[in-house]
Length: 203
Image (cartoon, helix red, strand yellow):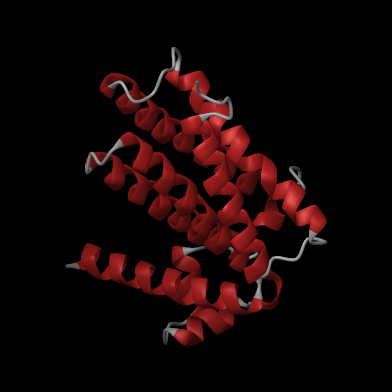
């Protein structure tokens, strides 16, 4: 019972924190406000999360785990590999949007100050490559994908999907609005179709 209550309190803290961070940004949120949102004493909040950064880090980790879990569930459903790749590309845009709403992306900029966040994102990338590799392996076994090294191909596909982000942000002066995310989505769709169909005209 105690463990269940502890788990419920932690879930309530993370939910309240996520809403605060998404609305106000990391720098403008205080631990006092989060504690007040759930009717908890500040000391009790610090029992679960000793610093605001550790709480924010857990919110980001939870967000990332949700995305990874969704992709794994999609893989387990065994839909067509081509459709898996399409859905993966679109879901990762949604995940990027969620991180942007949390202002989480800025924590990757300074590795000395934000090392825990950099490590978190690097671990996430490794898990993402592993999931993408699973998709490519399924496609190879089914005969849909003509690839020799799924692991290497997974890295290449990820690089292709990451690339347009910087291009689009630069062209839109780093505006992360709805139009930018629509541009991300359209770019991801087109890249996946090029990956699946190629650009060489078939005779």
